[in-house]
Length: 424
Image 1 (tube, rainbow, N blue to C red):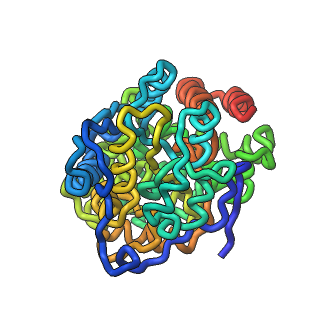
Image 2: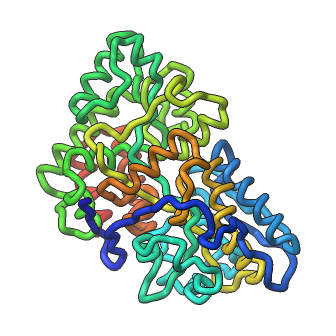
Image 3: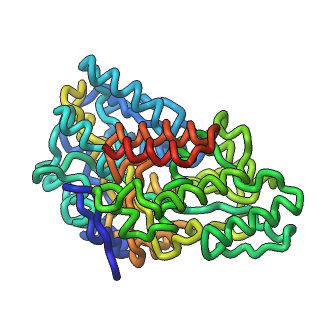
């Protein structure tokens, strides 16, 4: 199986999950709550609705059982796939007012906090909690800097997924299977428009557009060259990137005009309501659709973004121990639960993601997540800029800004210049 690496200092080689079934000792307990302490534990996330909120609720229920002496305090901030939360968090960290723990994407995004001296190392606690042997070595590498582990991953998500309404496709005479390429997808979008669906591609705010852009770049450049965008081995100013950006612009011609005012659940709703045929979004969408009472393979279908079959564009949500956390004992109990078999099962089955642990039992998960587990172990791997595995927050913010401007201007040359500048 071919693997690729990109982000300097955070090289990823495998990221494989093996299915077993328990904690390795025949039990499914967390072992959390064995230390002394009490009081409130503020958990700072951007999970406020749908499957994300349901996943957090499942994790909280496990925390309340295993860490009964502590009280969970929800510090969630809604909006922008975490953009709003990160702004609030940055202000709090700068004023030495950290929450007890906060959500951060594994990979390049952690570097901002580590370089600012805002995170405690967790390597010793990993040994205490038995996590070193429970999370794949390759994923541990992504959250390790200079030999120190800095976060506990709760899951693994896939970013390059298209969610489609099979009824809309069939009524237009189209297959419910994935188009083989971006060009084929554009042809299907034109067929849908001719059938009366004016905006067959549902799109939301700028960061969701960044995800769509990445999917096109991945399809057109291939995995090696795409990952090379993040370590400088692929030139952002190349003709190949220009051609991919032009195709991205063509896709937006089939998107809804109100995209700047929508968040991703709104775009998903356009698809499920039959107003659109497709939406590209991470696999947390499965959690939302399940929470909405929809039936997979009947009410919705999914596949890798056209041209990216066999590639898993990954990200991972994780939690950290901030320097100066008001209740470090409570945070440690939370982190142990996050990394536990029970905690990850209760979280991921509801959120729509696969566990970071290597002892996952596929029988615990629904049809989509079982397919994701299988793909996770057999696919090439690509980073996600939009969700922090590829690069630090500054790069992400600059890209989102450039993509948002392009949504209005359609100026490919300007977009390419701005993306090149964002890469530094």
